[in-house]
Image 1 (spheres, rainbow, N blue to C red):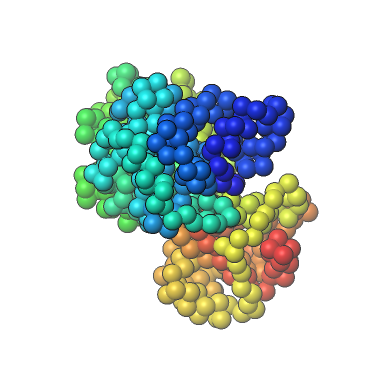
Image 2: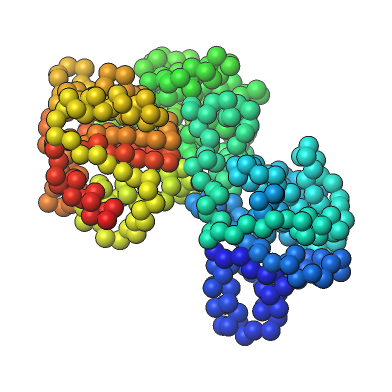
Length: 489
């Protein structure tokens, strides 16, 4: 995306033929509707009445969107001393204006600069500003023009350099303090689903709801936010289909009611208004069937949050819990589609790593994926300890409780395994790919050594915990090494 002089944009819209105008804004990477340009024209005229210097209209980014997030800014202007954001509304109310500017302040705060947030409402000819205490005030255009005049403009190729999409998905487990203190926002899609869920469970009847989404879509944040908003007025329980982590334990100490699935047998739902089944793809069929019976008899609503890709054993895969959930009478289904945690680079790399025949994925190497090659397990074991002290979360495969498995020969006893990191996320993730991983005749990654749990599924689980950087530690596997070289080169 390129910055533009907003007078130029308005005059191009007024004078160029539609095809010419379309090519013009395409050159700048701008996607703006005709009625929005009309609002921009009114804004430009108001500023021009105050000050006619063309420099205050220069270097605006119009309609910038943070990658992977449904968050858009109408006008952004970046300076080394401060950032200016202006939202344009044909009509609005002060409450709506304040809500949007508060949200904008949150997203822009990650740049670590002073931000001045404005909204211009055309129909009322009113310019609002969010003050330092996040209160809304009506201001004169002379304030805005003065700020634009005194801004020390920055030159850069693309605003993307200021935004890391993964910064905006707060994990209730790994960023528990931020979650508790409301230091996050949901995407528009998440908010819409949450509001529909509220309308269902507030009916006072038994409701069955499913929330389905792939890695990085924010299922956990959404479902825990739902519980957070209603647990003071309704009795709630969260059943986690796995082992409780440190985040779960912190929330329980704050009065939450989160229990592992192994403790859910014969649980009394008679005093529970809402039960959330988190990571529901891992629930046993008989547990699911009993839960549905108990919920109906106790008038308890149920929300099933799951991702069918995140199964860790053949038993879980063959159980096909998704179809069992879909078959519940009257169930209302929601699907999260906006990926906001996994950055584009890592998401693309995962697709082409797990399938050597994928040619439809555009991978752009931004330096966040790397690998090391070793030939013996002892060196790897020492290397794991080294990088663990350098900020890497080295995730290992979950071993069998009954038999010794090959991957235990190089795994560190202190590393988290696939089952303990369910639903969690980490900035820097490292995983080991040993010599038993290979590509089958269909190009899909497989594992040739016997393991109790599905090793490919566990590797996928571990890699998709990554927020920012991914490191592969390859042991004696030239096939995977060459695949990585082909991808990254």
